[in-house]
Length: 134
Image (cartoon, rainbow, N blue to C red; front, side, top):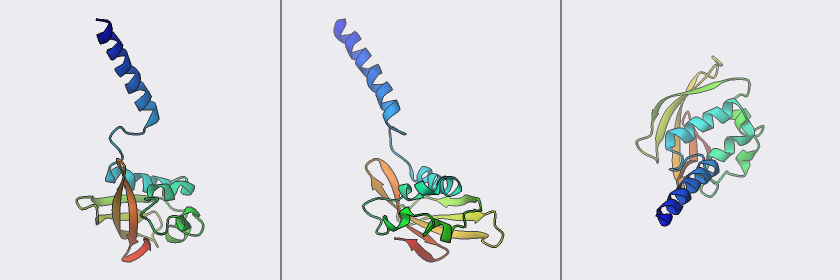
């Protein structure tokens, strides 16, 4: 009986620790990662680069400065939304990114995704036919 109780308590403690230590027990899915990318574009641009794979994105260090990258491709005064997401092929996840800026409008996006442990990360981003991050 003591072993059962000890095992039960150990499992409860493990579950509590894991819930505080990770965002998701099963990793970040493709759609969640791309949603996080859009959310960071709309809020804290200093975190946008964290949605990209640190080892497989060749431009990883270059995309850390939002004023030299994200503010050029995605004007900072605007709000961006995502639609038409098709994540059936991790090498070619397609979506439409729309801005509140009528001049920027809507652009097609292709994300190449790569796994980092349990998490899907963006490896490359092509916007309106131009590869902006590789």
